[in-house]
Length: 133
Ligand code: FE
Image (cartoon, rainbow, N blue to C red; front, side, top):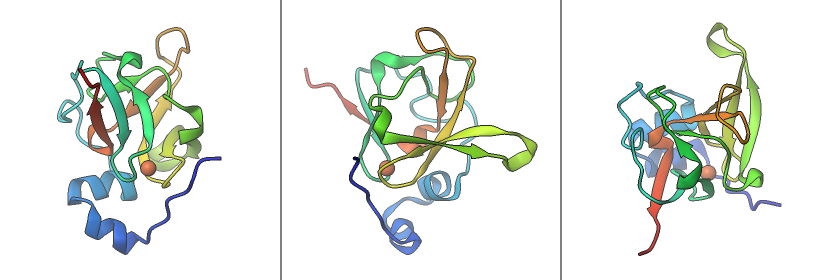
């Protein structure tokens, strides 16, 4: 089982820059085509911007045209949790970091093979750890 990271909202607020706090802890969505990883093709591991858990490998990233970094599968299924989200008049599936409970984005079923899934993730919820040379 994934080790849990539990901090108070006060602690998260002190630790995270305001834009990251809004996305990770308050479920905000960064405006499309603005995030630093939207077009990134760099090799490496995308980790949780709050707790550092390994979330998505760069070789599952693809250009969905949505304006947000998109992946067809998580690096480790145990590190993401899916939750039903009925906010904003839609029914969507929210993607949450299983380790710290932070909001990452949503998953949709219009992705490419082999999974057919599109994990649509906010850039500012992620930190890319570049692959060592
Ligand atoms: Fe996390």
